[in-house]
Structures are given as C-alpha cells and as structure tokens.
Length: 305
Ligand code: NCD
Image (cartoon, rainbow, N blue to C red):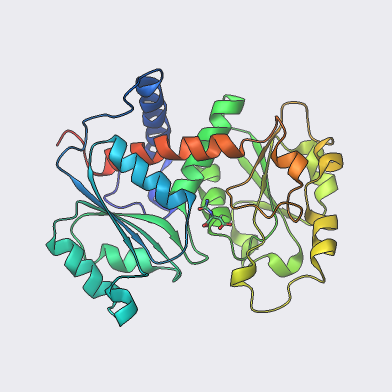
C-alpha cells in the first residue's frame, strides 16, 4: 500500500482487495461483540479536517478511528482559525506539530489532499475533494457490492445522474474497473464531464435501455450546490428521464441492487419507495463505511508497527 489514499488509482487490484478483505475480517471480529472496539491504533492520533459540510463521512471516519482506539481530533473549518484566513498549509503544519499520524481531509477544492500530503509526515486520506475523488466511498461501495452479490469481477454497474460534479462517480469508475467490474454511465449530456470518453466506462443516455442489463444501479445526487448554470430544464424533467422510480426498478434483473451514497434527494434522482425497498443497500453502505474506513486507517497507520 502507498502511504496516502488520495484517489482510487492509489490502489492496485491487490491493495483494493486487501482493504476489502481486512474490512470483512474487522466485521467478523466485531460481530456479536458487546464492546465494538479494537486496541490496534492505541496511542496514534487521527485528525479529521473537514472544510466542507458532511454528515455520514465525518461521523464514519470518527467512529472508525475510535473503534481502533486512536485519539481523534475533529476539526471543522467553522469556528477555527480558518475563518480568520489561515491557509491550508499553516493549518496542516500546526496539526503536524501536534503529532498527527493520520489526517483525513475533506475540502471543496479538488487537489487539496494532494497538497496536504506534501506538507505532512503522516498519512493523508482523501474524504472528498471538490468534484475530484472520494476513494473511501468507492471502497465501501465495492465492499457492499461484494457482500450482496458475492463478487465484483464481471459485475455490471450502472452509475446514473450528475457525473459531472460527482467525486463518488470518479472514484467508483476507477476502483470498480480495477476490480474487474463493467461500468456504464448514464446521464444527460450536460452532466457528463469533458473527456469522459477516456474513462474506463461505457456511456449511455437511455436509462430504460440499460437497466435490464445492470446488476447494480448507483444513483448519484443532483449536486445543486455545485451548479452555477442550468444543466437540465426542470427537476420534474430530470426525474422523468433519469430518476429511479418503482416502475423502472421493476425492469432490473431479479437480484440487482440499488445504491446511493447519500445524502438523497428523495423524489428527484430516487423515489422514496425505491430508497426504502429491499433492493436498496443505502443503509448497509453507511454501516460498511465504518468497517471499510477502519481497514484503511489500520493498513495506512500500520497498526502493529
Ligand atoms: C457524497 C459526497 O460528499 O461526495 N456523499 C458522501 O460522502 N456520502 C455524495 C454527495 O454529496 O452527493
């Protein structure tokens, strides 16, 4: 494994499989235990550096570090010296001086974790940078697919919606390809990035045509906060063409699953009855996020070293 986890490409097939297998071992070790805690990272310090809003990812990393017995510092830009204009570099050096072994960072600027990695001695884990990457989301998604379907190799994964603004899509395309899955992107042309043709994925525009050939449908949130222009005529029109409702879900093969990284716009990209159906893995994804992040922290911070 590399020292940092900044993007999906940092993991080759063996590394990615090691993370998933380690997460499975952690799940097994903790199953049925009353005290869900391992002593592995006792004496280590993990800093959660969140410059952008987050609910599940921040809590998930915090819980993961705590379940490994690390000391955890939660830093959010609001209420810190960042609001006084302190730069990312000075913040990083301050944390470094306090002896952080691992820094988990979320930032609205694509590439911020890469910069950070050049300033600190500890391991940097990217928890989402701008529209760039979100590698631990891709790992927990891969873990969830493997858990539900028993394999990743040859699994047909369709990723639907706001690919343009989605770091989840970018990381998933990379990691799923590394792990042997076949990815298809379905989106309105306005929500596909320039250069998508060079991604290791097929591109389609007709959701109804792709659904019967999908083992996994991953719905993306329409990221209105990143949109500075009108990318589609109306919410209703978007939902009609690219939303997953019960009728569309019925076109999936019998054992196909429906995923969403959260937070969801219910009624927009996904209907409530789909989100709450037995095919939906949305709650499992959140649970698997904790064990997958435990595996990442354990492997990067070298628990036994
Ligand atoms: C995603 C994110 O922040 O990139 N959410 C998450 O981490 N679970 C996806 C999103 O915001 O739509």
